[in-house]
Length: 241
Ligand code: G3P
Ligand code: CA
Image 1 (cartoon, rainbow, N blue to C red):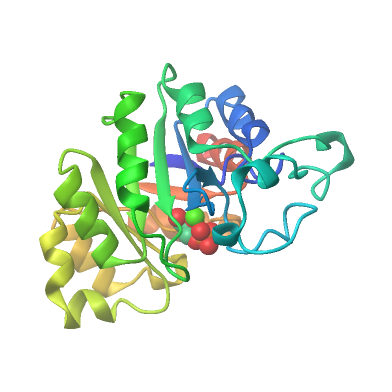
Image 2 (image 1 turned 180 degrees about the vertical axis):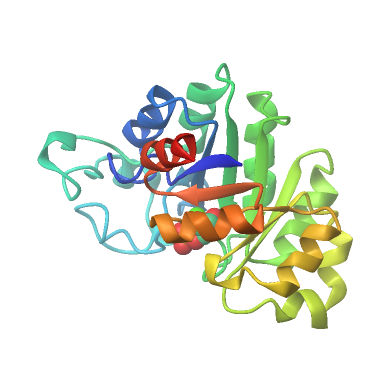
């Protein structure tokens, strides 16, 4: 079972920032998840919320703000004063940081609430520029977005996110054309239906595992990896078993 640092090691450093990613590298975590969105001027940034207010000292929507403005914001102080001065990174900075490390990078296209035309192509172009094709898994809650990824870069792995229900998998078979590598379900969805998909050969990576009981559930299910905000602790628990 691989451990995936969710938004970086986001329990020890501010989520989706270089310090959170560097923390995961220091802890030798084998995979890292980040979220990406697009600014008003088309820059791909690493950021979870559509709105800037929760994790920076700014406000407004990402899609409506220039990167130069976002770059000036503080993305660390909200988490802890010692991270004051941390900036919102470009995807390019993260790829540059990780390209020489033996780590898998899951890039979640955060386009389920706001559509970012061209996000897929911009992300894929960057992945190519840093020669990260073999290390990246692209994921999204949107089947059409992953379809775009498939047509632009069939060789880059794709994972479909799922949270409320697995119904789309069984009622609408469009996802089958995606040639998915993995399915990323909310942990509450672990059950018989997911078992069927697992038996078909899809890698199963549930999110977000925090408690020991959830980890035990994942172990019993024999999942292939878990997203967690506390990868160091989860790795320790796995070693104890
Ligand atoms: O990729 C798993 C998980 O990150 C999806 O939810 O809201 O944390 O991006 P969220
Ligand atoms: Ca995410």
